[in-house]
Length: 408
Picture 1 (cartoon, rainbow, N blue to C red):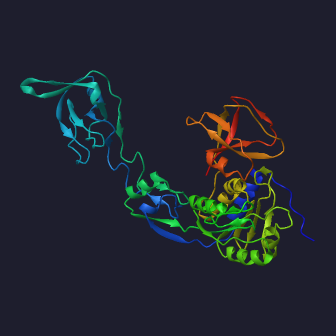
Picture 2 (picture 1 turned 90 degrees about the vertical axis):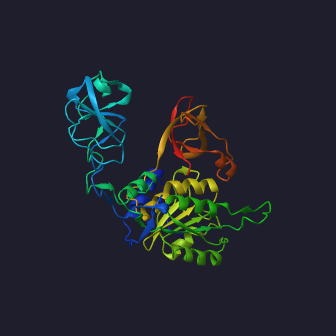
Picture 3 (picture 1 turned 30 degrees about the horizontal axis):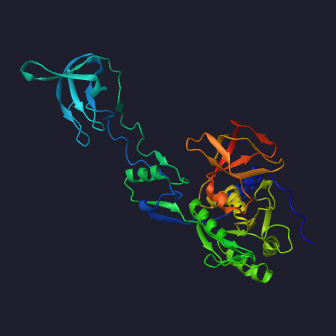
């Protein structure tokens, strides 16, 4: 007799279970040294520290004149100029102003910079260059003090950070041409179903091309994993089990299709027979109710429904979080924003629905895209977000706010 199926979970609880389970796994860390040209999107393995004070000296935040704030308003003698990249100047004396460019070192004795737009150049006796300043200046005005951005030795980027372009700039700023990052988790992708043919084949009316495997490979790569697409598994135990065994040799396995309760839905029974311990097997979402998550030998295993819409949504909700934890991110987040409907919307109560939608460029107006269910790939392609329709609310009117999930 098959084991009793666990009760369906709300997606928030299912997601918490995934993250906690994967965080608790014992894993051997594998690090890689990658050059900065290839560091974007990788997870930093070792914190980056400031190699010196930033800035390393007091510098000007504006083009203008370095002055003593006690000397203005007033007319001051222009002692000379200093540009970015030049060494520090001699101390500024009372009655003097030093023309200064953005980024240039502020001389000792100066405690303010007056913008060039707020001064008037004049000449004194013997054509001596002067500057007339008619407004007051606050101490430290437009001066970036030494160490104001970071002190030497302080942590600039903590370990576990997924590197973006600003992080890459920070690493380069500290004199490193490469970064120690977590190795990419190896993720096996297995599509199942007798109806699936290769993408270069002409499908018969009862067949579909294998879009899921390539969509998942793109999602895995974007989330920080290294995808491996396995051959399609047909709906027999003899065809399915060897491919599952191959997939379980990777750091993570994602199977699509064959996870419902039909006669030929063999994925969960076969995974269970191989030793996978399931934490959940149904989630109260649409699309994607039959999504399942389990653990095999310190490895996360996902059984995702086979229709592309279901696969995409459940990957984003659950599998992406597991992959990010494997990649070294301590606390994955699901970015849910808020938008307002530009047209009325309603759905059936009972399930949280993630439905394709279009959000306007200003992020203010949301419209649901009519679709024919989770196999409707053209509607998915036309969306830029998913609206998140709560299970306990039926209708939204124009101007009502609703959560949206970014389309991965």
